[in-house]
Length: 374
Image (tube, rainbow, N blue to C red; front, side):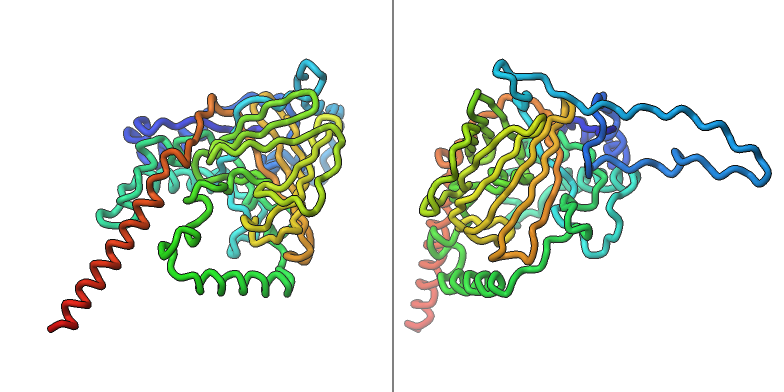
């Protein structure tokens, strides 16, 4: 599988145009020891690789000897004999979870991918409009947080979802539609976002981030992970809010249904080269794509080369979707270490924002009182 990636320093972008950036992003080719995994994001074979039909009357060409299939990649082993998944990885991607409604193909061409990279690089390089909310937020590029400043695996798929074949999340059940509508009404009744701290998003409150999963999803920035293995445990550390997921491998059962966690409870086992992980017991308060607390996530994690891990997950939730669905991602090797996110320790934004809103409310009340006194 010919997967390309590179790290793109911001200072380098400043010297290049968008078209040059796109070419540069694709210029570093990782040596691929492995065969392409099933349903991988690699580009499908070019039509040019298919022999053309013989001209009329021509003698058929002698059949070329069949090439043996490329051997599947076999990862190195940890001291206790497990396939070695350890290291620093990123799932940063330009491929959306769902296939856009106006797209009917499973893959894009390399030219289209280059165009997408160039457009994203140009957008990352744009300055914010003075006086807007984005303008008063910290500059992502200043801290190396723009996606095009990070390692990105080249993925030609038009969606991460591979099943259903249309690349879309299946329809919601009537029960899910009612539950989601009720939750939206309850949020509206609680007032505006900054009326009280409970209305602010969980990520802004440093409780849990979307990158932690499961399933593991691109967090938007800081989409980095560290995997550490012990004889009976695998740990996946997420950079965003530094959540650490502990996956026991000792055949212990899932906890009782009364236990519920933000990241659920994971149980794993090895099947040859693949780590199989099943996670249940979610608390439902941080729903993945509007899931319920009945969500079950099944992950398949396979080292496919020195530089990549194939990551495939299936989600099941009969209280939310009419059928299970499956997606695939690429975990690309990246540089470590991962420094502590320290979200709570540096999170002055919540208190300052709430204080600012209260001051604005007081100012408006004072002005209204003055007008009423006239």
